[in-house]
Structures are given as C-alpha cells and as structure tokens.
Image (cartoon, rainbow, N blue to C red):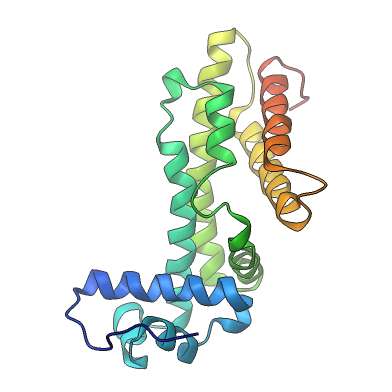
Length: 202
C-alpha cells in the first residue's frame, strides 16, 4: 500500500484519529485481519508508530474504534427512521443499505466479526453497539405493530431480523449470482410483514 503524501501535515487530533481509522479500514479491506499491522497502518496513513499509541492507547483499541466507525454507518441508516412513521420498506432499506454494506468491505466485516469472537474488548464494544442497533429496530417494529393492531415481541423480532440480514448480506457478497441485494431486500420485507401480521411464532 502506498503511503499518503505529503508526509507532514498540520492536522487536528480528531483528524489524525480519523485518518488512522480510515487507514485501518483500508488495510482490513485489502488483506483482512492479517493486514491489520502497525507498520501497514502507518504506511497507509502516513503516520508514525507512536501516533497509534498516542491517540488510541493500543492496536486493540484502534480496532475497537474501527468497529465503532463501521457500525455507526449501520446505525445512521436507522437513525433516519422515525419509529412513529416507520414503514416495512424503510426498515428494510435501513437494514440492508449503507456506506459499509458494500461487497468491497466483506473482508472488513469478516475480520471484525472474527475478532469479536475471541477478543474481550471487541465483545464489549459489539454488545454496546448491537444493543443500540437492536433497540432501534425493535422501536420501529413495535410502532408498526401498534398501528396494525397486532402484538409482537419487538426485541425478539429485531434479533431475528438482524441475524437474517447479516446472513442475507453475506450471501450477496459471496455469490451475487445466487442472491442479489434486491432479492435479499424482498426477502427481508416479506419477513417483516409476516412478523407484523403475527405470522412468526416469536
């Protein structure tokens, strides 16, 4: 990977942190977790090794910041949905669209999910972010069910939908000839409508 130029720039602390996060995402996208090395990140960002420790404390803390960055993109899609006016179509779009839900970021997600499974710090970050994600989905589901006069378990249904969309997105990345994003959205929408009509035993 080519280092950024020019090497010496006047940047704020926040800008340097953001540059290190962006460089980390680029390294993960290219080589997966094997590419997440201090040397590679420094080359990609045009930064010195000491800046990672200075701004994040450790490489693990930088990885957690990367996870928060990409997860925030998922939350941003749902933040635009007002539960009071939510529709199944809007929720589907919020679950299966976003800056980091692109095939080129498959390595990034696989690397991060792999670390969540074995890294206690990443597990804590995941629980915090996923709880916010789940709550946003559940709020929309509960509001839509109330409008239809049905009763559902919003939290349980949110867990189902998040798990479903994770799997659907993964399949669209692995083999888009088998499952396109449009088809994945159609399937997600069907499950949302079925849940709101009481058709799912949750």
